[in-house]
Length: 215
Length: 258
Ligand SMILES: Nc1ncnc2c1ncn2[C@@H]1O[C@H](COP(=O)(O)OP(=O)(O)O)[C@@H](O)[C@H]1O
Ligand SMILES: [Mg+2]
Image (cartoon, rainbow over all chains, first blue to last red; front, side, top):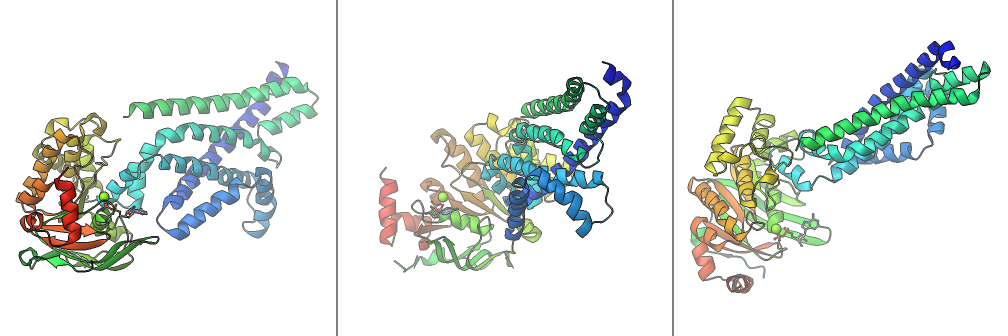
């Protein structure tokens, strides 16, 4: 109990660090994932090739390696002066976008092609067809895998701790160095992660139920 | 086999709406459409029949470019079909299509199905679109189903909604790809009656159907397709009583005697 009370601000900052890493990289992952999924199902071959390459590259690279590239190579070659936080968020976002894309695409594939054909035959553009007809019907199948992906993302944010971004794992390191019992610290850290991940899965369950009623 | 029989009085009139010239299409090695030349006049009702796999659906789908063609040109009301993109989308709105499997938007109510295209494609005012949708649903006899979801309707009702949805775009021409083939027998007539009324109202129609009764009463011309070619075209009376090609004779004897 003492650890938590004595160093509450440390825990709080770690918690907020993890929360903000998760939230920002989740937004990046969802937006990028949707765009790349649109590429992968588009009628334009170069876009499809780009989408496939994006997914193959990012999904098959270990996240640690991606972090190393983001932290050490990207600032040297492309964008000098970006903070570790920004670089971490982009590494996490890009990595997770590949999984988001594939979850969306598998959802899209469960919608009968006739739905898209009917939309196209009415004169809807590709974007309208995807947005108004296909994605809303893909939604229900997409929610459970999406929930898993974002929970995995929450846990992956701990990697940013290794690069001087302060989050829960960093808090744990500091406390360990102060000499507190590692078991107790781990307990509190785990609880903090659980708060985030359980909230996430709760939200997604709600979403799933909402989508279930909507038809 | 390459000879095409055309009966004189079935030759297209002088106001062409849909023109296909020398259209060819392959699916891999399969030559599904072979040198198709076809002119459909404004107000004309053309029935396409032929054995399964002869390319009837593909022909229909190339007319609004759901399928691309390998060579040849397709013009709707004088304008060639543009490549994929906004331009094509706009042109597609002028060509209504009714599918064998209805393809109503499953997550939208019947009313929303008929409103959606008007609002999103034609940029119509929402109120006006709803009014028009209700009138169209009334016209095809499903006015009282407006707030249900497609899955709650019978096949015949769904297909009539699909016709209303296509009509809501004020299309210049309507394509029907075996609109009654997925229906239970007792529902076929309710759909055919709607189509017949459309034909009487002067809609230009291309119908893939084996409904002889409909062809005889509503069609100006029957096209007989086999192996990706238009083998024979004639007035329905002429075609059904006196088919010229062996393929057509053979086909008719099969469907008339079952
Ligand atoms: N998307 C496709 N890919 C490959 N082959 C196809 C495709 N669509 C149709 N075909 C083939 O093209 C031929 C003509 O098909 P279709 O136009 O559907 O014939 P019909 O409507 O007259 O039965 C058939 O042999 C069919 O198997
Ligand atoms: Mg067919």
